[in-house]
Amino acid sequence: MEQTKIILDENEMPKQWYNVLSDLSSPIEPPLDPRTWEPISPEALEPIFPKSLIKQEMSSERFIDIPDEILEIYRLWRPSPLYRAHRLEKLLKTPAKIYYKNEGVSPAGSHKTNTSIAQAYYNMKEGTERITTETGAGQWGSALSLACNYFDLECKVYMVRSSYYQKPYRKSMMTIWGGNVVPSPSEDTEFGRKTLKEQPETPGSLGMAISEAVEDAIAHDSTKYSLGSVLNHVMLHQTVIGTECKKQLEKVDTYPDIVIGCCGGGSNLAGVSLEFIKDRLEGKRNPRVIAVEPSACPSLTEGEYRYDFGDTAEMTPLLKMYTLDHKYVPPAIHAGGLRYHGASPIISKLCAEGLIEAVSYDQYPVFDAAVQFARTEGIVPAPESSHAIRCAIDEALKCKQTGEEKTILFNLSGHGHFDMSSYDKYFNKELV
Image 1 (cartoon, one colour):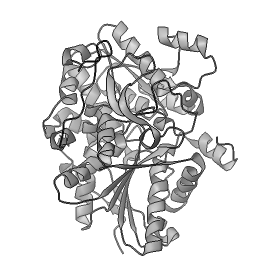
Image 2 (image 1 turned 60 degrees about the horizontal axis):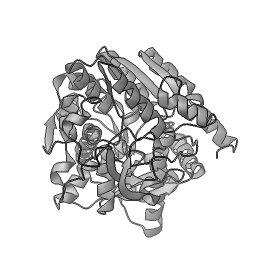
Image 3 (image 1 turned 90 degrees about the horizontal axis):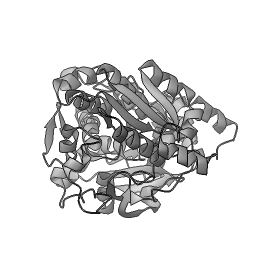
Image 4 (image 1 turned 135 degrees about the vertical axis):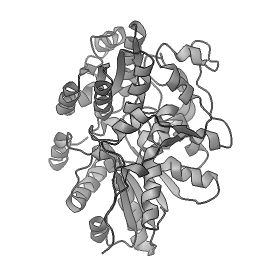
């Protein structure tokens, strides 16, 4: 019988993060100061980020060592398992081999802990006492609350209003770990109060929540801001996923023809794919990498590649990225973690250069795939992760038509245990 679960020992866990910026044929476009539209200096970022993370954001080092204090906490769930989806393959009657990396085994239930632990650690080392952040579906807020708990930091989370009410137990989880969670827009910031006055029925957006979190950080001493996706250092921290995947696939003597990840800001896609994009840049292999978006927020498939703000209030540096515009408020779909108007500058550049391709899906086919996966593999996936499952199933069905025995790898970025109301709406035909 072929192996189902591929496990690495703790001593095989990656000890370094991979920085794809060192291998690009041309430098990534720099962030711009919103006041001058000139490249922003590292010093201008210090009010909201610790110096060590600013250094990583702008680093050209190919590999960056992971501190022992971070590795110690990583060992709670890393290395995460890689699975062969035998039962799903059988249901689809496909000759393709489907593998998935299960990042839902982390304490917070998703891949987000790979960077939350790192960001909390570097903030603690530089004397930060309090961190503010935004969260969409709550995965990032949960991960950062957990990390702040470990490093004795206060954590204030501005959770997108629609998700705050769709997923109330995410708030409960954050509170258990000491997080202070409010729905965004909120009454706690000037921007939040202004937005609520102008749009009392707004579902909120990640852009709005970012504005609130940045305003809060700037207004308080010993407070910094933390972002769960988009930025270069976040993509860097997530590369432990792909590094482990490559080692695990080597154990069964295979290599992916297709690498798939859902994409909002881009962190879990970067995590699973950059190790394999490295092989393309080195001319060793040529795997396809597919970013999967919701059709309600398709920045890579329908956005413009240009400089834009990362937040609604225009407080952040301008980033060169695929964007639907920072004022765009996506519909309140149930994949709240993918409701971001832009994509990571790294992911955007790789997409613009043809190293990543993008597709988008409506909610119903995504939930169809989620239920197929749950009924075969036994894991209830998050709505965000289910976008990757939908694409993996479609690629496997193409193999069924052509007879090709391709190897498909996708990142199961998180479980859906807090998304039962979304599944209820799916079964009751109540999704938008």
